Image (tube, rainbow, N blue to C red; front, top):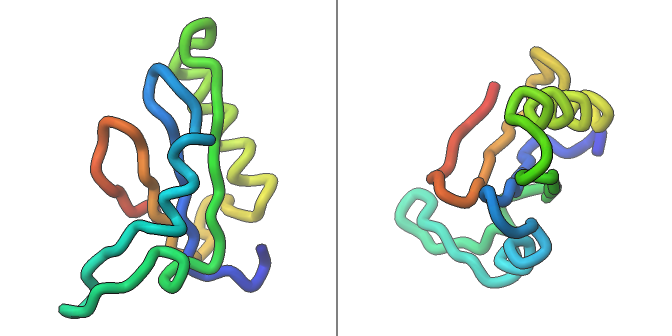
Amino acid sequence: MAQAQRILLYIHGIFGDTESMVPSIQTAKVQVNGQERSLRDIYDLVLAFDYDSLNTDIPTTARRLGQQLERVGLEANHSKELHVVAQGFTCATLG
């Protein structure tokens, strides 16, 4: 984890879990500077965040996500590149 500079984080939508999302790391392709590349060639580390979406409110889930990210060294001003893939959203980049 300490050497990882480019990190991909999967977060499932309101129903489901990330177990079905994570295998896409093996097959997904993206365009980078006009060239097709696989996600596993782009990212040093892939993380997944599972949560109970039916019985836990959003503020609690957000707090737990923040705590989990801190546990793996992604606290504020971590200087790593973190991309988030979340069901129902496109990709977002977090500082």
